[in-house]
Image 1: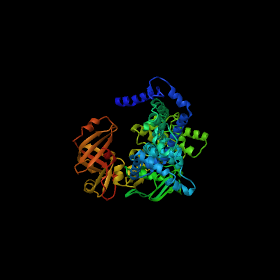
Image 2 (image 1 turned 60 degrees about the vertical axis):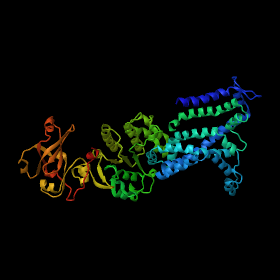
Image 3 (image 1 turned 90 degrees about the horizontal axis):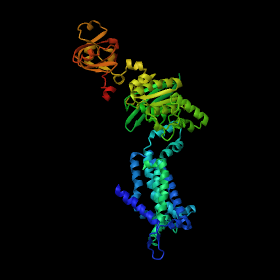
Image 4 (image 1 turned 45 degrees about the vertical axis):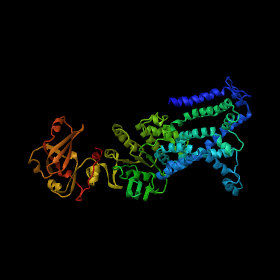
Length: 263
Length: 358
């Protein structure tokens, strides 16, 4: 516990402190003088603001897409499937997690390419593959993080006693009414719990966007580029605090729904 | 009186198990009807078939002479009080009670008024804004009842609703349930494994065993005239005399049942009882005496072989005398017309509920 605290919180503190230093433009060495210049740049330079909003927007959209996809799957797994099928489905949902992240990202690169399977399927409808760019990033990230949404929602729904569904039907509620008035409210904390994963994982991603994102950048790329290519560690640290702050706000909001007890 | 529920040749099989086996049953309007039986006897399955949570393998369910066999639960004019109450945890008491009306799009003002009335019926005024987790088990049970009653269904189905309550509260709720039923005039179909509960509240009782109705009768009939050894054993405690023992003690072939409270016990007084042909007598040794407050139960090993249970009211305070009878010789006597004959068929071995829990 102590080690965790030192290693984890210590690293975060170091990050925050680094973000308040600056870099010598000529030598590239870090100057340990306190300044808020990094944050000023972050908020005033247009390109960074755009990237920040784009990143949050993508993370939010991925979360919504995953929630919408995961809910019916989790509901089927928890309440409709036979115990045997249920086990098979859990394995099926977990299976993609065994494959390497890079393999899956490159698989989507292939899927989305101009002569790939998606283009082939879309062609008869007069459509074409979305190509590489923000939509491709959203598709790929949604695919990558979907299991992290399905599993908590499945676990949450499994805990809901069947008698609640029966009670709703008994009181005159059809399937849709029951889902809207009973199932979704009951599953909501679990959906929020899952969204913490999908949102934070999307927020920090920088590899998928390199592979399928074309020229678009996310916050993670800015961090990566500043640290690697530009070697501007203080600015990278400043950029990295943005997702942390966003996540803290998000977690605070999630706490109010009681979702953290669902993790 | 018209029928509220009719079951015609109703069967429900789960794989190889016949949970409900070719059942015919009519329940009258306004009746307090109980289905009594051990767990796994099919009584709850019958309830779920009436509610529409299960589809029968064969047969028909009629509500008010209308065939509803293939109709889903939400389209049937019955409401259920669940064993675990099934209160929606994310809604207040008021929202729970209003749920059925809201789903049926009853206007807001009427909804509130009817919810208020229903909460008053179950004596939960002032609890409308509480959350389910703030309620005790007994209060949740009342919410479940109000939530069902507010819809004014033709039939109310109750699935062991008192099972989770402690004994005192259960006794109170038994009487209250019966009062509520009289007040609202709705047909109640009540599932229980507690014979005392069934005897207390019901107009008629169906005793279930292995998916069939063993006996369908009023509480008095059921207790005084059990139709089978199973019923005799399940409803109350009973002493079964059969075969050679019956021949020896009663002078008759067959299987007979005598209730413990109808047997008198006296210290050995030979000759006296034998003189009256309307009275049977059997000597034995008291093996055990159990003091139960209002009654004392004695277990007597008869010389003829079987063991009889005898109970008597503790109307005077001379309990010591009874307790001291252990290992003493006694004579048991009972009136011949208190014997219930179960016919000559050999009775299957039956465990009474008391023995099951012991």
